Length: 203
Image (cartoon, rainbow, N blue to C red; front, top):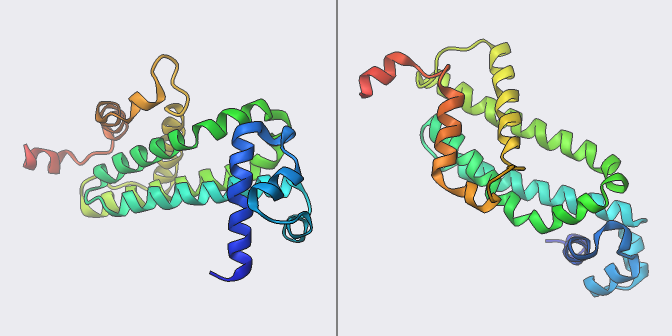
């Protein structure tokens, strides 16, 4: 890593801890500089404002989540296993991000505008990943053949359905990590796209 990258990483690491503990509003640039072990002049050199640091922290976390999900998906063999791995890696990442996210809700109005574009881009990446899985399953014969339009719609529906597990109503978030929830969700979602011929051969 180059020097600039190391400095930025140290700043974001320190800022993430502070945002997770105090929120966006109550965290100051001076506190971030101290947490990162840098002078305020160095901090302002890389980030002109606290909001820019906040955006960078959230985007960095989203990149890490996407990386973990993609690694889990690539390590799975069948399309169904890939969907399950996608969901499991996503929930695990969210649980790790939970305390930071809780504080963000306290600053919801202040942070919403900054988060919208990051959230939109992150969700589009998820939709693209699900579309890749559906395409692979369709090409392998595990799923029925689907038009591009239907595949796009199914990808959107699945990402939307998965998002519902981020905010469970009566179940602890950590409990959703159990395979029972993943199996039920995936079985329900692919009930209409599974290849019946292939299914009969494996029974």
